[in-house]
Length: 555
Image 1 (tube, helix red, strand yellow):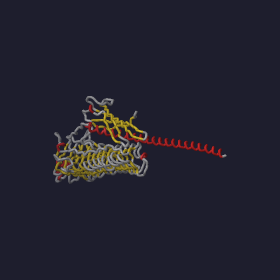
Image 2 (cartoon, one colour):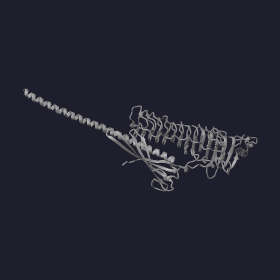
Image 3 (cartoon, one colour):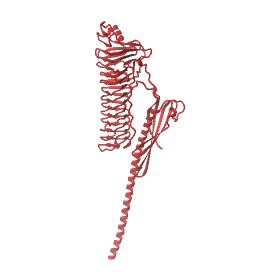
Image 4 (spheres, one colour):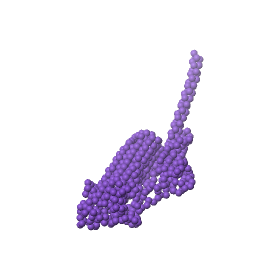
């Protein structure tokens, strides 16, 4: 019995040993599997991150190359245009090495070539950026490559620009309200731009200061030297570039059709803003109050990207994101000097010049004004519709004329919005004055045959003075009663001082001033009204306009 029990005990010990060895083998296998899965997951994550960073650096290289071309592609030097440009940047995974291949299509040709030979005019450019990012993972080195192609329409800059090419130019801050609309030409201010009520700019908006949009404002594109703030349902149809190092903010259904690129932080406080392009903070961080599908493209920040609600960033960015990856900050728009207009610019040889007081007098006599009135006597720069003044409306000279009101503060006065003073143009008319005021309504019409009549109201610079320096500063005021300009009248308002429009104004033309104040509805359809005696200086540079960008299959 003892022997039998002893034998059975030895068998049990052997079985136990086998079980122990089996369990150990299973544990070892599971450990290896778990380690392998962890290594695989890390490698996959590293590879995905590397691809996102390769894509971002390729796009940055394209943008950098376009800036280089805009400032260095001179006409006449086409054969020296670059065929390849290097670009490097540091990513969270490592250094991104990018090569941008360039080729150009000459006008009349069908193929892209680099280098060009002979005397040619470039019509189109093609950029192909190839970016490779090497990242380390638990499975060794991971390499990711992305390729992006950009097509650019190319034109000699001098053939399309104008000395007075903006719909509105202000050397100071520009605040718009109550249905402010600019169609064509765009808007430039050397200060800040603020839109607070249903304004629309169909053209580029450039501001040396900050830009703020709210309450259904619409802008084609924004380039700001300061920050960008956007709330309460505004729309930017294209890109937003904000070069200020302060924080830019988006909230309450702010909509951007292109890319938002800032030098400073970006704050998004609600889930309702939408950015159809990319969101890039070149030198700061990006913070979200809540998560949601906000950015269609990718996100990138020099610092961290966070959400205060703890949600996943992958729900915010449709094409991934990269933290801690610095990039080139947007370039601030330069302060632009308002083109100077002097008396000599307006009176080239052959110009018909008429004294303003004499013109008022001739209208007063024609209208049967009282012989004792200052208008009838030719001693005033005020023309009122009332019977104590010119006793009626004004008619312009039969040929293109410059009215000389230097030394005068011109006033044209109606009897109210229902009975404005009329000004009928038989040909182009330029009024040159120390200041100009329209009060109680003005209605400008034209009987010119064959083309629109051009009305220029100009408060010029004194000889030798700099624009907007305070010297010779005069104002243009259109106040109570408003102003009406017929469809066949084009109007240019220029003041080496302030332009104030305190009642509704609709015109075709442009406004240039050292400062502006628009209190009511203003609608401008841009037309170039550069005075005949002033020539637009041609630019020696080509302009490059992006037309298409897409990814190219690597392989």
